[in-house]
Length: 223
Image 1 (cartoon, rainbow, N blue to C red):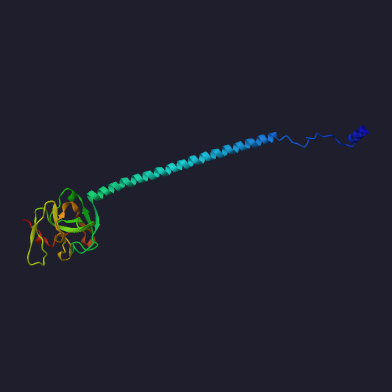
Image 2: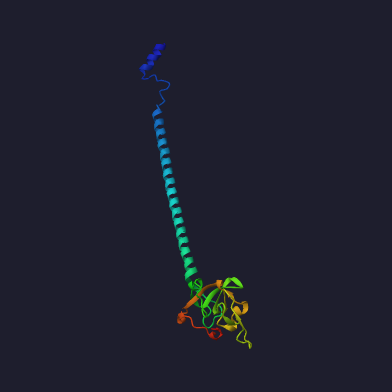
């Protein structure tokens, strides 16, 4: 009976299969997948290293340009500082104390070599630190140097008083004597407070050129 069933099954076209006949050999696919994964990881690492190197190069380039710009700024800043400190610069004047020679908002050029080489003369117009307020500057005319005899009284005073300028000081007055706070108020000014000497006027263009002489030259003592 068993033999007949087996024979009948063979005659009916049936076949005997192994219990594991439905399983495919996945070993090759696993190897291929592992290889692809390794390639992907290597590619990612390569791109990451490339990006990091590019980013580092860009960062180094930016830092280098920044330091070069900073160096140029410091260099030219030092040159500009030396130029303004020892050569001179443009000054905008304000106030009525130097009228009519210098009007309010006039623009003048001030050179600094004369004060550094102690070449300030009587009659020069100078820029100096305000002896009562070091944060501000004053623009006045030199009426006397050290040892000079000067008139310390105002023009309206009937009695004229004279004095001598002490060593290392200058006597400064505004051309507009009736509206000027100068050495008649705070006394002789130390020479070290002088910052520059005004050479000529730049603006307005109608007054461009060298400055006119003092309208109070009679107050300058030449003895």
